[in-house]
Image (cartoon, rainbow, N blue to C red; front, side, top):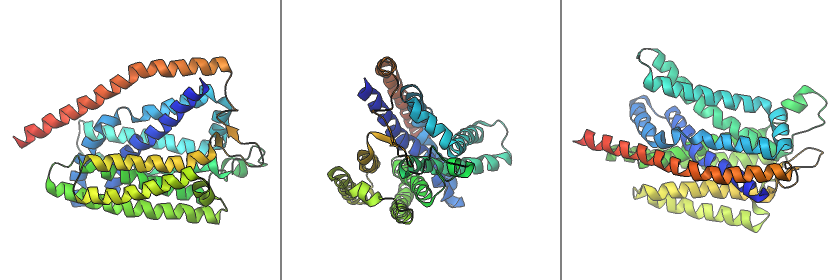
Length: 342
């Protein structure tokens, strides 16, 4: 059952980055949208993230529960050594969700709407930024269990150029995902062309942010190049992602809607594969201490068996419900669009 649990953990992280990333990207898109286009972008983004808004953080919760139950030592080290970025990320999630609800369903429309909009946009950028910082911190080798002081133990474990670079790249990646997903939600040709231009811009920004990550790795003397290109899987993942960028450019230029979404998800998957394959089964790279591994730092076998069966049985109930949720939102959006056009 250990590999079943590990598979679910990887799937939860992957789905959270894909679906939650697109969700965060909706706010990031607003941050880079001019005032005259902001209302259109906001409405389109609301339609795009509607089906996943209700459920995207479920994947984060599943990942946290799996770590807490199945890998308690890994969970303990992360929640203690990285408690500051974790707290900021969670506050960002709360602030963003609250602002999203109030700006859409507040009974009184007044100047507070501007406050809700700003909170939503800023927290949409802050949350994935610190998510990227956390992801970089568990791989950079700065987590020190024998740190002699507070700054070394709880600040310098995540506050370094490599983590900042990955944080910026995560924000750019979320904006890229949202821009791609929004093309298919545009109701007019003018809106579709606008989001196509946004997708092209976010592609350039994401590519530049990726270069920033490699530059930061050189500064921090982190062998990122070796991590990615030091094995056949990582090299193949980068090559396939690069090829898909060319196909993406063609699909976007031809105003396709479904293919760009598939390619965007594929590219994110290849990025995760290029990094994850090199480190598996290690989950946290420690400083001057053995790395924490998904295979060697598990809960007792009885706990892993119970957790594995709970995940398998839970999928029987959760996945059909998620499909129905997505279908309901899409069906409602279609009826609304048809009624508006009539």
